[in-house]
Length: 88
Figure 1 (spheres, rainbow, N blue to C red):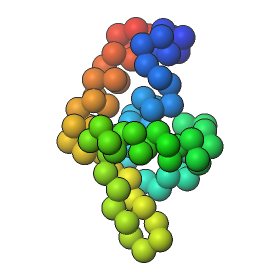
Figure 2: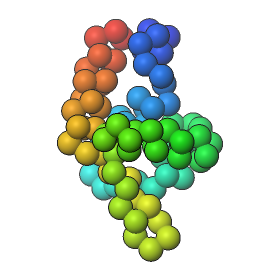
Figure 3: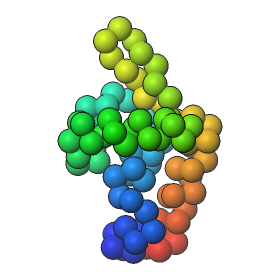
Figure 4: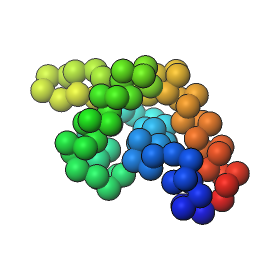
């Protein structure tokens, strides 16, 4: 199943969107990087791209950036999960 999923999507960005959707509260970049098994610097690069696309937003609280899905990001995440279930 995972090979089919990887065929259609870049794995780490898709998993980040899904991971952000699964929690009721926002996440930190370091926690998200661990959940999708990538380095923090790679996660930051992906998150910057996702922000440019309007899929995530950052809320800076002191020295920490909180990452949240936007409405558009939630919609994309929902569709990624639906496709993941179809190809599985």
